[in-house]
Amino acid sequence: MSVGDYYSLCQRYRGRAVEIVTHDGRIHRGIIGDVDNNSVYLQPLSRTRDLGGFGYGWYGYPGWGAGIALGAIATLALLPLFFI
Image (cartoon, rainbow, N blue to C red):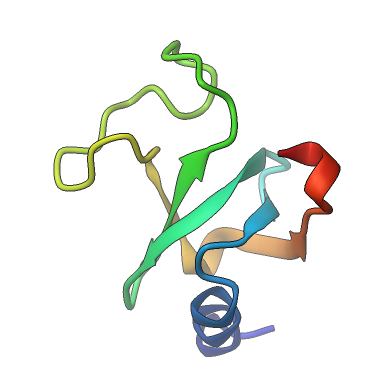
């Protein structure tokens, strides 16, 4: 899929729980909070505040994890409700 396809898909799934796998093999699970032309921003599913993938701190969006570049996404899938 192209970056434009992932942008459209992320816009459509905004507010839904997803799993994103990047080209380097990292897995990110969360709720899509925002999407811009370059990145998708996930709200972590877990309530922990450690550096386990989301603790970098995002200055513009309190409580959201670090942005994931749309070009780095290898796969994106909706999560069933039991993951939440």
